[in-house]
Length: 416
Ligand code: BGC
Image (tube, rainbow, N blue to C red; front, side, top):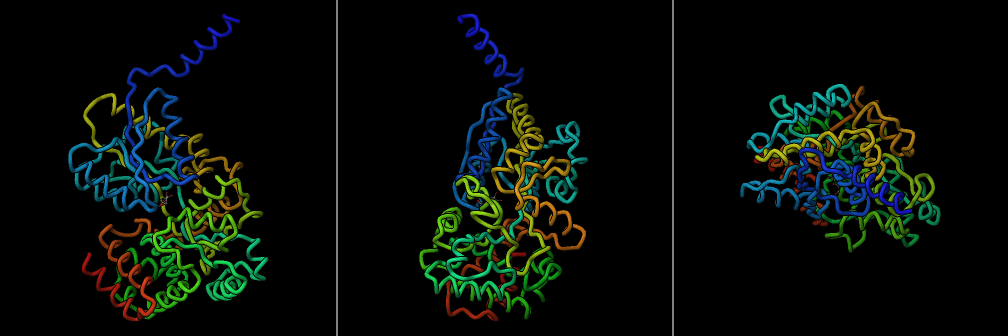
């Protein structure tokens, strides 16, 4: 008995023994909801298995605005974390300021260029060198629906905006909240861009939010986007201001509300609550956007650090993020799809399989577009200008769609 125990202790010690360069990684992120926390715990666990230690630097706040503010303060005072959840255009902005370190050696060893699509790796590179590692691909243009609420209301899950308004009326009349929403700028922008994708179409969406084309930003079709966005406001509840996105998701989970327009991190909440897709909830493309894919690639950028142990731990973290086992467990919890193209998808549900199929297909049709609301399409300055116009408009019931479109163009121009 004693021997058995000693052997067990020894094998546990062997498994957790520290590598030659055990270090600490301090990781800044904003993954604090139920599904998000489970996902990030998988990364912590896998890093600790390798003998490194994880210092959690979580800054709550969906969409990451608060996290970015805290990160700036830390970096400017000369004390950046090892890695931070930074994505899209922000990677270039941080790279340009000289804060980031190269990961090219890890990338070459782990063959990132061969296993991750170039449309993603391009975002991760600054001046041709890897400074960030992608974690996943989120699809943003989803509608999450509670089928029981639809049934009780005698409504159909909508596939177009017109159908959405018809269903929303019935749901409202039946005493449910049609659309669960959190009144925060990034959530307003998430719903706005889904409507823009439908009304403008992929080509003009790109002209507006990537090229910052004034004619489209201030044009007739944008007026229509604002008009429909305003109509959506009729179907949210009066307690929505300030509400967190995951609280809105829980309203769909518990049957208080029928729908939420949100990226597939919402699926992480359904999963964490033990709900089954196709039974307890359904995932369909946001109204009018079937075949289109608004992408949001989460990634960690790595900061330049001095000591060797920290650098080794950073490299271990970078390699782990693109490890196949991690990609599987993380994305199953997070609601996203793996960013590697060579993954076995057999454990993934129908929402993830649909997402993967649309991701691949939309890349060939011009319907794979970057999310404005999640920092993938343009600079943080232009994004901030769009957020302001969109949020102010949404919160003012007497606002004029025509004026809003012209304000949008002017605000973006001033931020360019
Ligand atoms: C991030 C997701 C996150 C969501 C809510 C998005 O911007 O990309 O990873 O779950 O915000 O916090």
